[in-house]
Each structure stands twice: as structure tokens, then as C-alpha cells.
Image 1 (tube, one colour):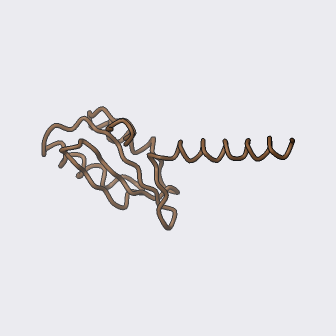
Image 2 (cartoon, rainbow, N blue to C red; image 1 turned 30 degrees about the vertical axis):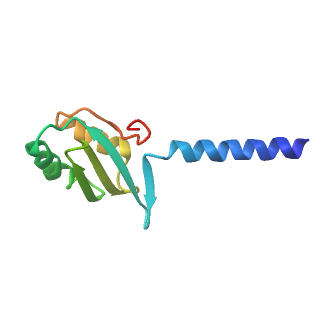
Image 3 (spheres, rainbow, N blue to C red; image 1 turned 180 degrees about the vertical axis):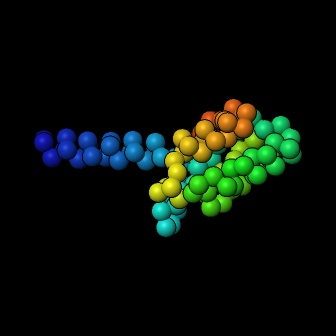
Length: 105
């Protein structure tokens, strides 16, 4: 009985951790990818974000999709965090939240 309880607990913790990490994906060499929903409206917004966020500490790659209003950033997790990247975009004057692919369905 105790063994079944322990296995159930371990499985529940594993599923909870997996579900929480949907918006932040690990990549090789200590890098991670995060996708944000950003209140962009035009090409000038895209240029402003590209110009400023590309030089944030730890950013190694960035893809901006104006049509879907998303910004995907690959970064070195040892040099920055999701929160710092989100704050950097907000500092430019945009509303920013973590992208949740399940919301779009």
C-alpha cells in the first residue's frame, strides 16, 4: 500500500513539473527558449524589439512573428532569466506575457 502511494506521488510531481515548463524549453549548452505574447502592432515595433532585445545579456537568437504577435528568444540561462527578458520588453512600452500554446486553440 505504501509503495503504491509513493509511486502515485512521484508520478504526480513529475507531471506537474512537465506541465509547468511548457513555455520555457531547454536547449543544448545551458540555453533555453521562451516565447512571449507581445502587444506589437507594426514593423516599427518589430525593429524596436530586435534592436534592443538582441543585445540583452545572454540572448543568442530571437524570432519575431508580427502576425501572431510573438517573440521567441533563445538565451543562456546562466546569464539571464525569463523574468529579466520579459521586463526588458516591457521597458520598451509593450504588454508582455508568457505564450501559452493551449490558449490559441
